[in-house]
Length: 112
Length: 114
Image (cartoon, rainbow over all chains, first blue to last red; front, side):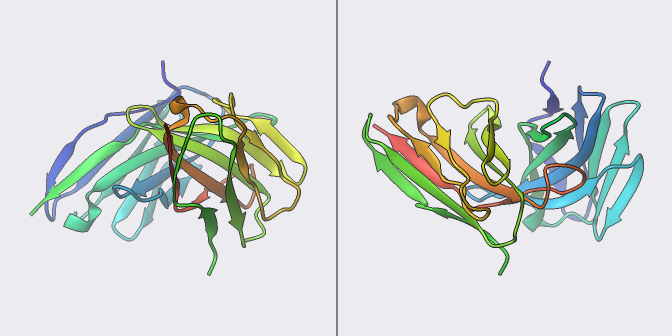
């Protein structure tokens, strides 16, 4: 079992709709959770971080964390064509030398 | 501007010829890390550094070396590159290796070993 799992997609969503991206993780003592956006040929860009159960909102983005279910999600409201990218879920694993482990990413396509 | 700078952006080299990819950050970050990204495998950590003179292996360290003599710099060294090291490499830094701090990534280095 992979430590951080995402559906690879592609996920196709009409412009203006809500895009929902999901991620599960296997390490129960994970500390913090991140969503990165990566455009083709570019470097990942941090868009959201969350470490407490519940929802965290930032503009059109909402991150949701459920530690009991080991599940983190990203909602994008009013999806725009510029949101078309690969979204990487990442988890900081707690240990004496913590590190961030990435999922393989979900490719999101917003259709006009 | 706060950033992580990697050089070169593109590199084609031959098997066995030693090379260094440089990485520098201007944010006074303690934690730095190298990742490689391959299709279908995602981002995999090569090495990381919690602070100056403190480095440790990630998930795929074979064939790579690093050093952290100064806080801002974290070069990646391939002593004898092989074709299976052809990949897209990212350097990343974070204020701390703990807690809620995410990474800032460099622009990437696309390496081809022939």
